[in-house]
Image (cartoon, rainbow, N blue to C red):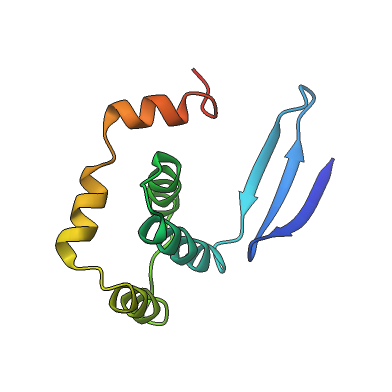
Length: 110
């Protein structure tokens, strides 16, 4: 069975196997925009979330990138929120193994 849907500007197809497990196939023409949205969320939250960092890592590992069109928008967001490079680095460093274990355990397979 094939299902196609659009979710947050990322088109994906899902094929369901005999065991009922869905396998997703992502259309990366829009994955770059999803990466931009995830970066916005990561930078905009009051407290960092491991899930945001995981999603960013996953998208980057699958080839998504902030292209020359999206990068300036992210830089504008950082300027508007007055986020210095050090602040962004501190947010990244706040993603510890302990935080990932606590927040991601319920959503990742063992």
